[in-house]
Length: 275
Length: 275
Image (tube, rainbow over all chains, first blue to last red):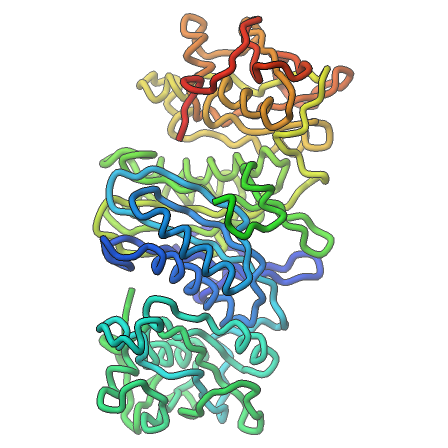
């Protein structure tokens, strides 16, 4: 796809969002798709699927410090549509973001839903995953592994998996301060690996500092995705303006993008969830 | 869906596009989806599917007189992806519109593609389908029924079906002059019926004036969709600035939205292609 005619705001398709300068505003655009059997289960509650579709897209906006403006939905009709609409209603209301439009189609097989989210940058330059600087500190919001436990049926963490909360407020508070920021959709380790690669640095994580939902399963919590927390770097002297934990340090680029408890990690394979 | 929290620019979801005022610019946004087995055939050339996905969305922008800015693609992976990319490349190049971003997913069943097109209004107020005024004249660009003949295998019209051309230049030329405008995706008769209903008028079509690809099959040509021509109304005294044919007149709202060769049409059922 990188060989296609690309808009400069596409940032080479390396980022989660596109950036569009319009007049004196900067828009942030993202599109995510979910398919039955891959991203949500057949027979599952489509209210959760709808919520998640909204949350995943808004989480991309959050990682850019954007305020949501509106959403465009691509919806394939089928059973459970009433529940889908209920979940959509709840997600739009909870995040105070309106629907702008979209398309509804008939399909003959499994279903797919697409969502485009449009937001307004609250701060420019817009944060990206490629700005981490040597000496910066690495931080994460929230608790990792909650989605994993929810997926496994833990009643305390069901909401984390079915109804994740995009960190919109935190993203806006952080945008003026961070050197790099992204949301954790594919697991802390893989996403840190990606941030380090994009920033052409190495990032060292001290696993004992990582806030996890289950101490016994610390390693899994750092590899499982779908927590939609924010991962970001700040200069050493900057006090984080949101609740978060310091979990690592940005180092000069070595042969391994990720250094995990002093062990260099060269290969992203198996580090996390690859869609 | 109309009960969901809607953005004012969604125009109550009654229009093909959303309108977004950003700073001193007006953006036009649209999203269309295509599914295997419904909108394109299994085993068909995905280069055509990709082209059509782009064309259908740009045709929506054309009906608003918008200049395209960029596209976001939702793509489900599978066989024929190389052809899909080739068709996408051709469509982006032909219409000089870049890719802004998107998402690529794995699916287990039939495939679906979604596209969001973003454009800039070349004229405000942005044309809509609801502005037709009594005494206006109804016009259409191009020749209707070409897509039907192409679908049936007529070699002369294959491109009309597989590679439709969105009327972007015509849409921009018309935008400052039209009282109402839309693209014909579902057939002339059904779409005229919709324009009349939205404008709270009746519209009389003189079928003998309608430019069709096959005189013997005039009626079918007016009911078959996918020609993506522009349908618009102009005040009586306004000379159309593009190649087009005058095919009817806007009349006071009677009991039938559409008057076809003096016969009132009350029911849209069977008038055209209903997705």
